[in-house]
Length: 438
Image (tube, rainbow, N blue to C red; front, side, top):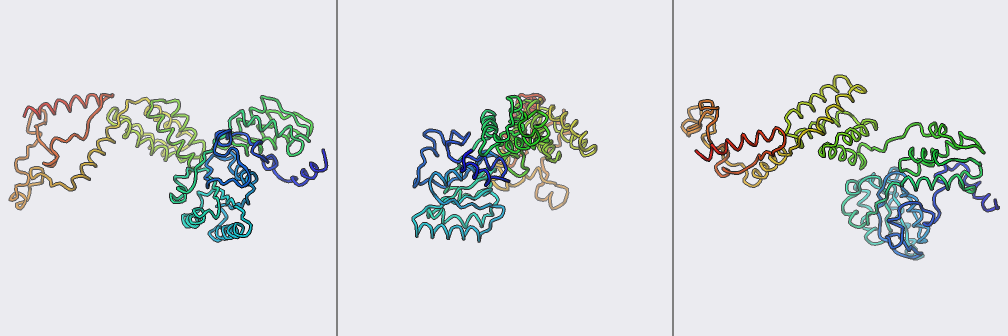
């Protein structure tokens, strides 16, 4: 090892492996080929080149901070870093003032990197607007959340959203190999070895997160000791169970919930149980899951199987009674039932149709025959007059119009031919025939 490498290694003492192995050039970057590959938005960068303000959106450990640092290095621009968790409006203004001074005195550009930008308040984000628009700074925002939810629209319209993907298993395996072999910044000086099977175990524990990969690898190597092989036991001890990516207020939360609902809607009980389990194992309140199931029972099953709502509400009661972990049993029973139930969204479409009529026509008068006519004043106005009491007729039905006069003939509820709703459709068709015959 030459003197320069020795000096670099001394400076890195105490730094975690993830920091030591951070790529120094875009060529060293693993993954994100859709951004830095030939002809892509971040390819062919050179000193002095102007890039648009960017919002780097991606899961933890996908390389957002690394990419921001590489942009600063490659473009030879000043990179100023702020954490949205710690910085305030004052910090933003100071950074912008220095950027303006740097531009005016030296003609130098500044990249303002704000980590976790979705945590900035509206006021803090608004403070950035005029300076991003004027080009005083090029904003590089990093977020694990959907920018549409966490970044104000005005700022979002001035930035290019760049989506980073979680690293693939093959890409993560490449990082393991590099770290084990690198004697300058990695574990090469320790002489540890690792085989393909154990590498895949580390990759599985990382779940697409390069930072977690390096953390598990570093601890496992320490447990193995210099000159020894890293074993499956070392990795299992280092990983100590995978932390599931699931922020209850974030983008991954909404992604898992959406997958759960769409799996039930798509009549896939396997996927539905999987996504439900992902939520519960990540610490989601089972009542949140059950509320989604109760809504689903009406929104997506409805009268195709009226028992679905009974099953969902019964599961809610059962879980509140027994709690977890036993509550996962009624939860799983209900989810599989809902997934395999015949489907109808007519409760949703019927309400939407009725709401549309209410919005379009306002508060139409109640027909006089449908108003209560018990009082003298009401009778004098003709309220209740000519009302036909259905139980006075055969089959407890008499053809009659119950909508406001202006809406007579409008169709609101149109049952499907799915499950029990097929019987309701036949019954409705017969009632309509009788109404026409009248």
